Image 1: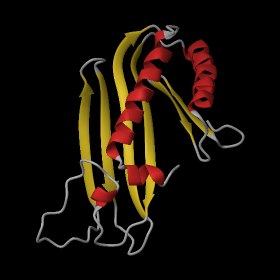
Image 2: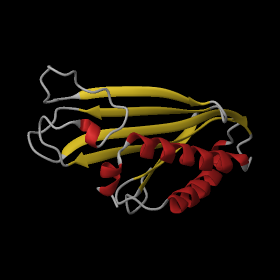
Image 3: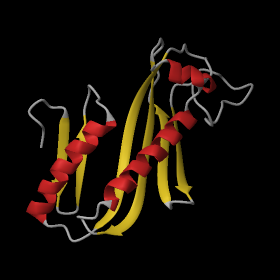
Length: 172
């Protein structure tokens, strides 16, 4: 289902509920407010028995001002670099980390990818951060929202840990 202004897309299934915010992006508080509103309707209409997974996922399309042959290390941390002596112009890459926050038992799937780089800037690099936690909660439990807030913090730590200060400056 789409909101009249096309800013929100909700997917309501017997096995789950997903709310996506489309461009132009808004602040987190408005997303949570709309999530709570639609979650109440979902609970009322579909009567889910339990919540077993909570997640927040942000798919970022970074537009990096790079030329072919520039190092991605200028903008991204922990990216596997091209070996010395090999051709340095990268046409595509895919790197995925499956991470666990031991303290909270939350998980983060971090994917960094480039599909076919254009010959000139900007270079579209996908930085996909999917933070989630497996749970066993009542659909009415307010702890859902506390866990979601924690997942957002974990997502932010992962995102800002994956990019350099120079990349962050592009989006200030």
